[in-house]
Amino acid sequence: MITATTIAQTLHLDRTRHSFTGMCPSCGYRGFTVEEREGKVLVHCHAGRCDQTEVLVALRDRGLWTTERRPKQETRTTITDLTEMAYNHHTSNNRATRRFIYDT
Figure 1 (spheres, helix red, strand yellow):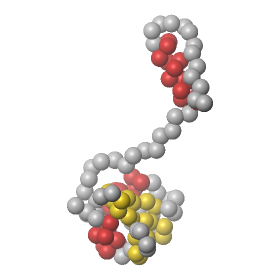
Figure 2 (tube, one colour; figure 1 turned 90 degrees about the horizontal axis):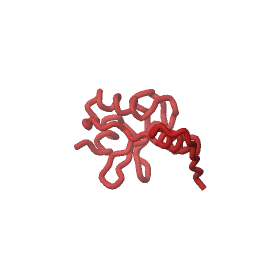
Figure 3 (cartoon, one colour; figure 1 turned 135 degrees about the vertical axis):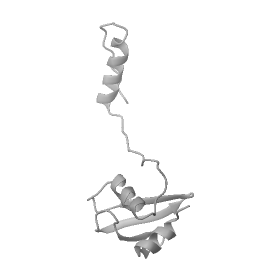
Figure 4 (cartoon, one colour; figure 1 turned 45 degrees about the vertical axis):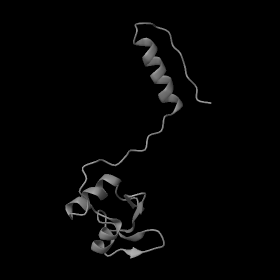
């Protein structure tokens, strides 16, 4: 199993209080962090030049990431999404009624 310490040593990252920081393996800019929380290795590029998938691909290419799981995408449900879901649900029964759901 790959640990944050293994990634940090291989990429020559600097140790901070709770994590390791240094050059991103994907974009090459400083602002990359690696840490371990609750048995999970968390990686993130704060430079804003690459996304999580690109970071994981770069780590995988170096043999530092072995899992095939994809990173979680942050999802947020908006009022427009809820309205569309409610409309689609109630029109799927061939009824022409519109019902709106508002998140308060």
